[in-house]
Image (cartoon, one colour):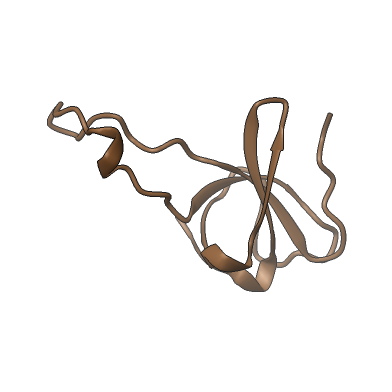
Length: 85
């Protein structure tokens, strides 16, 4: 099943937190925090300056969390996307 955003909304897949640091140290579960990073999976017809495949930073408290087929997604308006990477 595919999520199709309406108007200026963006559907993005949440990234899983890193289990290791760049130097190879294992991170305990208590150290992992939710990130406000996600990869864009689909955009609505009115979404501006955002395209599929972009990695985005978004306002954490304005997103709607959705779990579909064991994958975590967010739906957020394009105005709540702070930056692309």
